[in-house]
Amino acid sequence: MNPPASDDYTLQIQQVALAERSSNSYRAVLHTSRGLLHCILHPAPPGAVPQVGAAPKSDSARLGVILIGGAIGGFAGPGDRVYARLSDELPALGIACLQLHYRKPNFFEECVLDVLGGVAFLKGMGVERMATVGHSFGGAISIMAGVLSPAVVAVVALASQTYGATRVAEVAPRPLLVVHGKGDTRLHYRNAEQIYAWAKEPKELVLYDGAEHGLRECDAQLHDLLRSWLPAKLHAL
Image 1 (cartoon, rainbow, N blue to C red):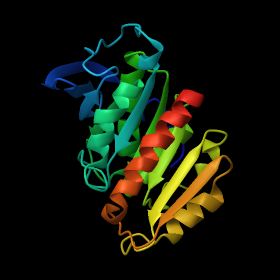
Image 2: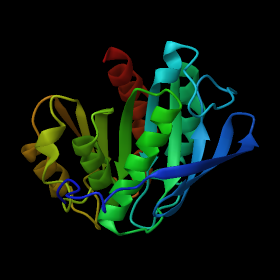
Image 3: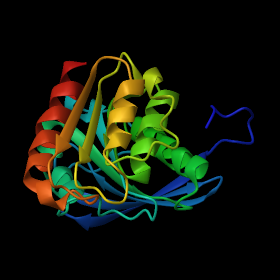
């Protein structure tokens, strides 16, 4: 995928509808120029009431993470609810979390626009620096969003496909984390090695022995890795 060549290839947020989901999360429906984009927002600090278009009240509100699913979309992500657990934990560290469900799952360019829409939404809440984390198909989406948006300052690709990831070198000098299971029978871990080879420093490659595509076999290790890596990179920048 190349950067959008014309104004026709854009996604504009026209309206945002927020509804409280729990004490620490909100369902967000982004009414866009290309359809409805459904998200779950976990603001920082926990329990904060989101104020779209308002200035952040602290430096903590300036950091965010976008958590991206595979080809079918949804909010689950890899492992045993790793995305949900991170969304519960990271706001206490000053990092807002946004999970999103694609408008058109498995359409690469449209899904990239969805993540860029998520970036724009968080920016409207005062988030200035964010990381993207994507699994499988979403790994390449995470990479491309990092290529296209300067607001993305760290990128994670989990069990990623290589299609759509060939421009990963353009993520640099922002940090990149590539993770894959060596037991993956859907997308071979050589994909991760190839993405890592294409990428420039700073970059990290983590391979888990025996872990399949969903990374459930390394759930605890993956959670601990992301739980430490994301705050370290976002707060350091």
